[in-house]
Length: 297
Image (cartoon, rainbow, N blue to C red; front, side, top):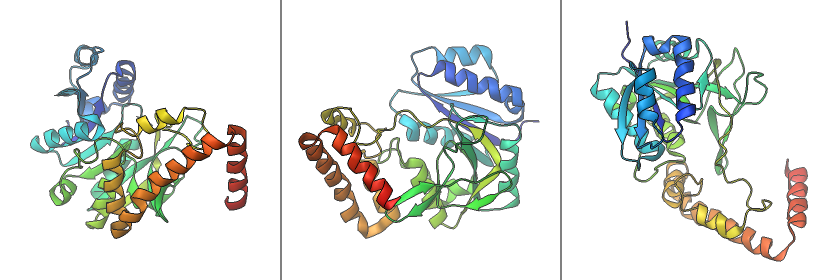
């Protein structure tokens, strides 16, 4: 019997990755156990057709190609709530849960009302290098934490790779802010806002998934060989960690009035790095970064 649990997978033009994800869920038996919803944001690589042929039980919700992650996940959440979902799981198509992971997340949510749970992600089967999961507020930023097997840790916010929550979260705080935060940081702000509204956030060390770090991250501005003009242009992409509307909302949500200082400070640092890159050889910049890491850890 299919449970009123909806697993939402937003996708765009990653046919092979998406099909591999669904194949993995089929091997685990989750395609028959839960409602699997793929939000296909206007893919032009045949993703929709391939899913319909290979996995007819998977529900497909279509976007227009302009949803990004947040718009896709919002569309899926609206669909799931309308269908009577009791629990919703965010899941990226490059995230592969190990056997029993989804069941553990759901069981914990059911046993702990007003709780959001997430899996601990690792880069590969060795489970040596952790990637996504829970994050905690640290100074003027947030940082990932590792929750090992057998451990349970509370956190302040979560990466959206594999997150389980009850419908009461939506009923309490609504949906993620797709217009202000179309892609980057929407997941951590949404879970942080849920925590401020009284929901507990828990990472389950025994709920394990495999997911490598996203290759779209910018890397270091001060030491990368990427031209600085390209760096500045990249800020116009919603995938950038400093996409202006997303970063402003992030600063507001986490730091309140301090956002008026933190927001311009971030871009001021980028301007400083740009000037230094113009004046100093890259080898010197890298040495300066090494000295900083040695001095401050």
